[in-house]
Amino acid sequence: RALQGAGARSVVATHCKVADRSTPRVMVSSHEALQNGLAKDGALRQAMAETAARDATSPPFYWAAFLLTGVADRPLALGK
Image (cartoon, rainbow, N blue to C red; front, side, top):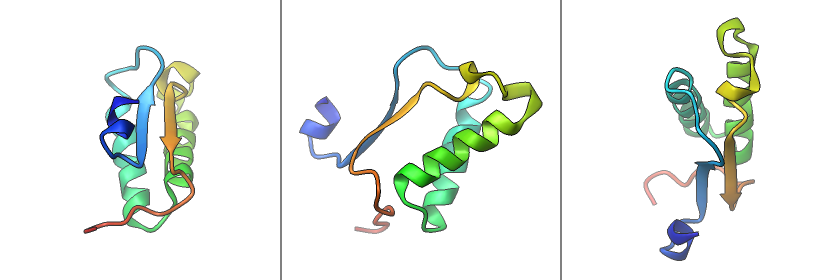
């Protein structure tokens, strides 16, 4: 809430402890999807699905903790 109070339109956060191995994959994948024009909710959903599809990171512990709050259904406005 503090980030949104400070002006962030959207925030990706976790509600519990996350794995060090899979978190960078989820974040990098979601940012790549954002750069390719996907909306924020779709980008995070795609990154989580990709992580869940890997044998080593298929349990929800590795991908299910991420939450997107705020404006979710618009692409990222890069450079603005």
